[in-house]
Length: 221
Image 1 (cartoon, helix red, strand yellow):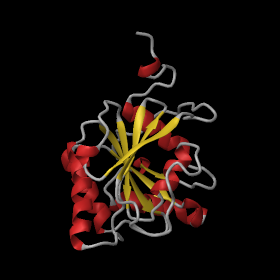
Image 2 (image 1 turned 60 degrees about the horizontal axis):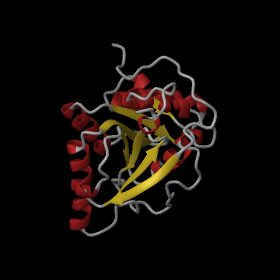
Image 3 (image 1 turned 135 degrees about the vertical axis):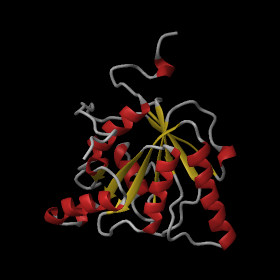
Image 4 (image 1 turned 135 degrees about the horizontal axis):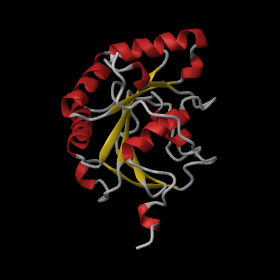
């Protein structure tokens, strides 16, 4: 199998990285998104798949993004500035959203508009639950990414809920069902933090961020 374009050499992440993280705003439509040129990383997946938990773990925060036990509760595009060098965007979950048909359709149109028309978007993380294999929605979304040229990294969440002997098989099967290179699907656990650094290495490369250089806002004029 050909080498994955997202496959990267090991990189050092400082202890406590990323440090400075701020919630910027929520937007109900793309026109309300913050006007910024910072590269963006979007997180998408089924409702209750663990997007908020992943974001909190990546940013070393407990409640940066609110974790909900009610599927479909996140209905907005939520923007977080990370290290003054990039933006994380938490997208509304799909699959279990509750609301009127018009409301659900509106959420879908908002997500599609963001993914298609946001030039700052450099990488999308497609989250799937390690306890279940990807279904039609995830497969169709991945095919859509390929057609538009958007790079995507698969993240297998809640990896600690699957036995170690079964996890690798599930990771490879997920990659197969999503037509991805096996190295482009990373198993992640918020408890053990397994997978965190590997995800960060992919994010930094996709966004062109060099930890040896100061953020643009702090660089000398």
